Length: 154
Image (cartoon, rainbow, N blue to C red; front, side, top):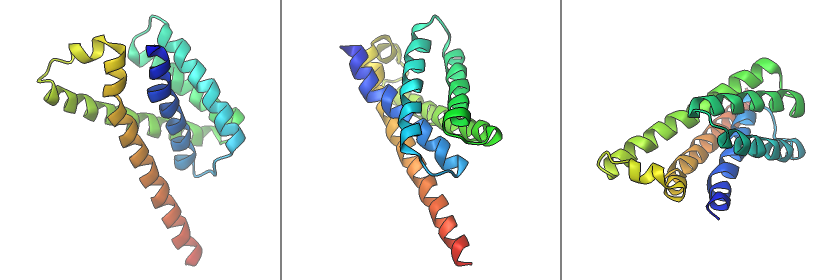
């Protein structure tokens, strides 16, 4: 049951955001079929890599490699643009998670063991990161769209 909650509240939204961010920073329009096919592959990859006995950094690196591969081969985004966009959106996610952990430390007075020992608490505690990433990506999308509109008028 907790796995399903984690999948629905954290993994799927995060994957959808990573892919959306990839398109935003690559300056490409979202192709729905490729987007959802890539999301399915990335969710499965995330589940598999998290189940492996790896440190956080290793599974994140594996997922970035899969994200770049999906962007290049399935979404037809140039390799260098895929790499740049994937790294940008992953870095933003990491920074937002760091901010979230800092805020959790303040809230729990430094005792995060309570939060990270329970998968359900950990999933709920990660929701602010998902919401913040949504806000950042929508803001970046809006700025890019605004700049494109200005460039067409000039």
